[in-house]
Length: 348
Image 1 (cartoon, rainbow, N blue to C red):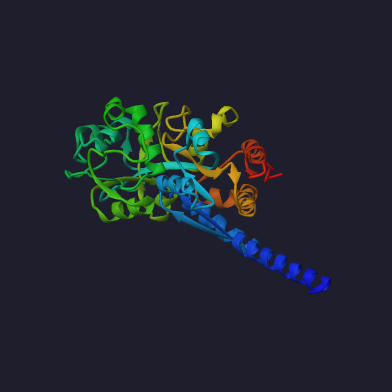
Image 2: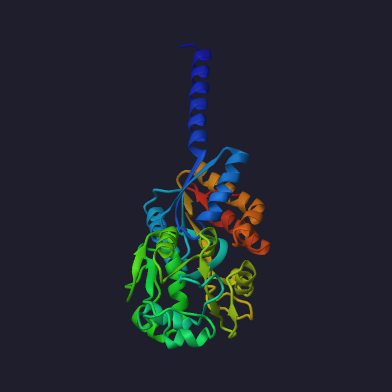
């Protein structure tokens, strides 16, 4: 083979390799939380239209997302339950908050529409503990004078899978109920004292819609999409508040992300006259050392685009976008922490 033929062969081989890398990078694979799935889907649709890059996101719950990123079967994981700094270090991961929103108790009671039923945190905990079993129980009726409540058993619906939504929900219940804290606790999956399980936010929403006399908890976008009756909750300042993006923003207003190690932040039961008490963030998980830098760049480009262009879609679905100063912190963290095997920064 002459010199010209060798150069031609090398050029063709490198072109083929580049083509494979480009095609591979055209699909980003992630898995995890169902909490942010509606907004991630919208971002992915718009991003694909603009760039041709696809997002394959499996909404399997935060527990599944953490398992898959640890097993390196996805390019990123997503969880509503943030990992503590020691766990991030143990597994070589980094995380950042992508969007915030609210977990909302929803009910299916004939004649009771959205924003009509009032509950306190203690009453909600006792329903999920199985201590309050009827809708006309005196503790519920006392909070809802003038509202006709049936002498009907309460059908408690909870998540059946490992869930960040459950983590946020049970984190709140541990703060407002000592009995819940002592006997059940805060986790992505708990031993439920009462009720039936549904898989994912969508599964809980469908269960509540079908079962008369039921109560469940879902991310607010699912309540809106399914036209479900959300409740009013008494917040830390003593006010009964509705789940709205404004009230989620109120709960997130005091968050000091700059001093949160590994971006670990819990937004439940925050002060503020308008604060929704079950507010939380959803997080993205990636490895610090990337074996496929091209794919890692594609993941970061998608989330960078979402930070720059996704606020309108997020607000339309009643999520709370991250503040600009926090986004600047996150981009700096990408530059510092995410590197290839040789130690070179991937994001610059």
